[in-house]
Length: 233
Ligand code: 4HQ
Image 1 (tube, helix red, strand yellow):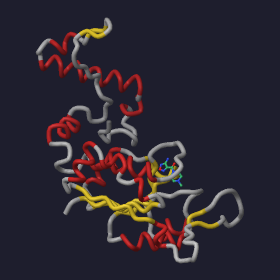
Image 2 (cartoon, rainbow, N blue to C red):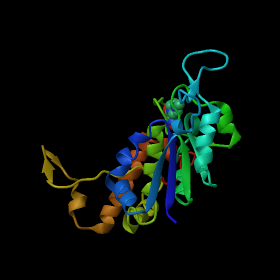
Image 3 (cartoon, protein in one colour):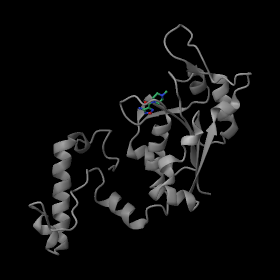
Image 4 (tube, helix red, strand yellow):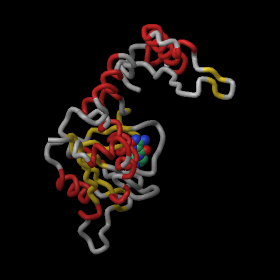
């Protein structure tokens, strides 16, 4: 069976969005993965179909109700990993992305307003993941980021060549610079070695450039810290 993603959201109409285009979109159309957007509002029970309420203890904004959210979760939960997108979560890294790509699928909970009643997160042991240290207006874009990163790793999505190359060579380093025609553009020449036809020299140059750029921009990736060694970008 292929990878199945369920996204619980108050804005199901924004899916698949960018996931319906390009690489992920072709894979979706081709049945290499499946995406279901579940409208949390469909699980509201009162006359006004409310999904949120005022926070206990006071303060600004509204909080999504645990009972409504949990009924939405129950409607799709089938043993797949449950993930809540939140800036409070562990930072999403390529290592986790790759592990998720090896699972049956995921259930992603995208919050709006000030957040979700903590008990709904706690009760089912949601894993919390963040796509970065900035504040989005909802978890939907974060869910799309996670899915985009996962889907490109699914078997048959990228083709063996690109994925194999990524694993062996660029693992843990930033990408070397790329060039295409024309050979000189606005007075800027393509590095000569790339025109030499010497494949060993080209591979050595690319490796050296990848190391230089990584050292300059992201020395943390070389440091062998927990945040590195995952084989990311
Ligand atoms: N939000 N990484 C607040 C994020 C976010 C992030 C999602 C905003 C949850 C309630 N999610 N809502 N950064 O900023 O994942």
